[in-house]
Structures are given as C-alpha cells and as structure tokens.
Amino acid sequence: MRLPDVPKSLTARRYLSDGELVPDVRDPLLGGTAPSTLIRAGHVRAHHAQAAATADLLFRAAPPQHCLHRS
Image (cartoon, rainbow, N blue to C red):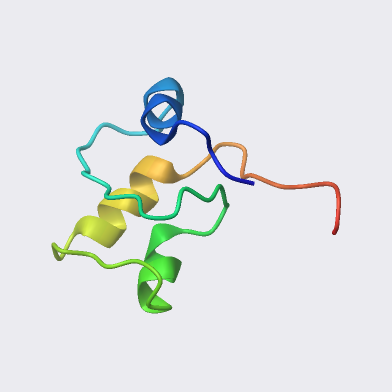
C-alpha cells in the first residue's frame, strides 16, 4: 500500500511521544517495521546517532499494526 500524501498522513497520525525527526521519504510505503530494523537492513539511512531510537519511539503504534489478510 502507498500513502498518497505522506506529509498529510504524518501530520494526521497520533504519536506516543514528543520529539523531532525530519524524514526524507523516497518511497512512501506503509508498514509496521521498526525504523531501527530498516536501518540495520540498509533500507533507511540515519544521519544522526539517535535517529533510529527517536524514530522507533515516535512511530511506535499502540496497538501494534497488523493485517488480517494474507496475499
């Protein structure tokens, strides 16, 4: 699934913590993978030492995301 308007989606969602992060989205995919996992896999680059931890905290969902359908 792709988000048609990433800035609007990020503004509209609720966050579990305060913090600041400046994402540069090159591929607006929706997913439930932790940013630190994507960084370790080489799919996301972090430009600051605390970026992964900050992103994990800000984008954590409560309850966690899930999909009842399999493709």
